Image 1 (cartoon, rainbow, N blue to C red):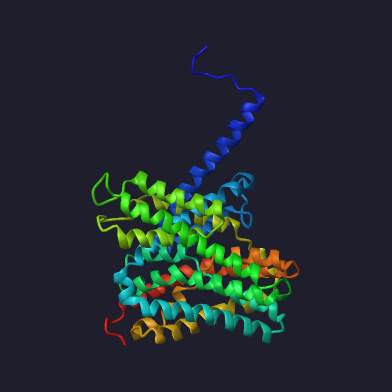
Image 2 (cartoon, rainbow, N blue to C red):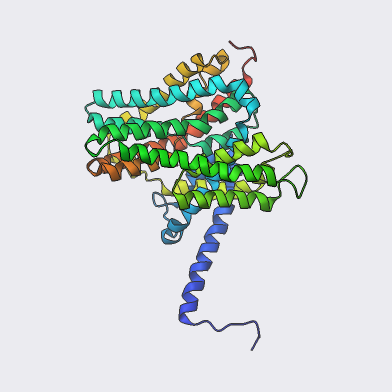
Length: 406
C-alpha cells in the first residue's frame, strides 16, 4: 500500500466532492474571465460587459451551471473585497491636487445628478400613475451608480485626463449623496414611524464608515511602505484591504466609503509613498473577474418582463435623468464644452448599492417590497450591461475632442 494513499470513507468522499466542485468552478470562472477579457479587446467592448454577459450565461437566467449553495455564501465576501479594492483606488484619486483642480466640477455634477435623478424619476412615475411614495423611493434608489464598473472602464481605456480624473471624483462621492437622499426619502414615506430610525441608519452607515476609514487610513499612511521604500508590499496591501473589508462588515457600515476614506488619507498623507496603491492594482483583477461574473450570474432577466411598461418607464426615466442632470451639473461646474455631454452617459452603470437600498426599502415598507426589488433588479440588468459601453464611448469621445473645446 502506498504511504501517501488515504482510505476514503463516505463522509470524507462527500466533502472532497464538494471541495473539488468548488475549486473546479473557480478555475473555470478564471479561465472564462480570461477569455472574456480577450474577446472584449478584440471587439472593443468593455471587459466589464463581457464578464457580466458570461455571468448571465452560466447563471440561473442562462445555463444554470453554478452550484448556487456554494457560491451564495461566497459572493458577499468576494464582492466586499473587490469593491473595497476599487474604493481604495478611487480614494487614491481624491488628492488635494485633484480636488483643487476639479473640486467645483465634482461637487456640481455629483449633486446635480443625484438631485436630478431623484426628482425626474419620481415625477415621471407619479405622472404615469404610480403611488407617490413608491415613486419617491424608486427615484432615490435610481441615484446609485456602480463605481467598480466605471473605475474598470477608465482603467481599461488607458485614458488619464481632466475628464477621467473628474469622473473618478464623482463616483467617489455621489453614492454618499445618494444614501443621504435615500434616508430622507425613506423617512418622508414612513413618517408614521418617525424620522429618527432612517436618518440614524444613514448616519451610522456613513459616519461609521468614515471613522473606520480614518482608523485604518491614518496608521496605514504612517506605517506602510517602510519595508520596501516608496511602495507598500503586497502583504501590506492585502492586510489593509482585508482588515477594512472585514471590519466594515462586522460593524455593518459601508465598505465602499470606508475604503475611499482610507485610500484618500493614504494618498494625501503618505508622502514617503511613490506608488501607494500599486500592489492593490496588481492583485485586484482576479477578484474583479469573480465579482463581475457572479454579479452577472445573480441578475434575473425575468425581472425585465414581470413589471411590463413600468419597468420600461423606470429605465427610460433614469436614462433621461442621468443625461439631463449630467449636462446641467457640467454647466454649473464650468467644465469644457467637449465634456459637457459626456458625464451623463459615463454615470449610467448601476449595481450593488442600488440593490442594497432596495432591500432596506423592501424591509421597511413590505407592501411595496416586491415592486421595489423587481424594478431595481430590472434597472440593474439593463444599466450593468449597456452602462459600461456608454461610459467607454464617453471617455473615448472626450479623448478625441479638441483640448480647448468650450
